[in-house]
Length: 171
Image 1 (cartoon, rainbow, N blue to C red):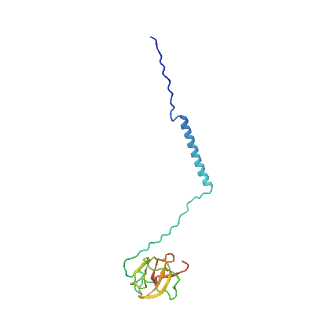
Image 2: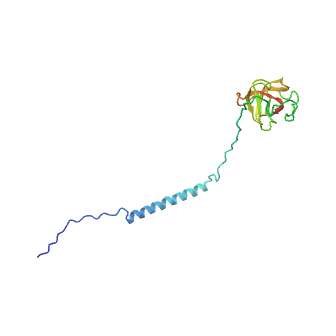
Image 3: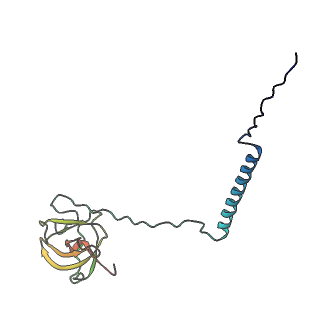
């Protein structure tokens, strides 16, 4: 018996996807990218980039509230009450002057449609809010009233008691 050797065609050997050269190339690229990132960060610090961020200034303005009751507020009590600041001397407040709401104890000043405690309330002006005097003085219910208009919002207007107003310069 004779031995016969049967030869089969050689199959090509497939290379593995992750061979040594692919891994080595990926490591080189990662090193180059990391190094260039660090160099760019270092250069940005040397170039005089701002070291701190600026802070925004925010001024909070309290919301205006309107109370449903029609009675006098703390800023509109009967004449001679201890809560009322004294009436300013005559002639101090006049049309065209700017006034600031004061002495309400944080309750605000009710501004009305017409002079008088029984008139409808249009809005409540916040403590320290500034208005321009439009009309007045008018005497009603034992108080002196002036019609005030907001310098930046003309919809904020109404009649207010002089006892809670102070003249201001250059609002």
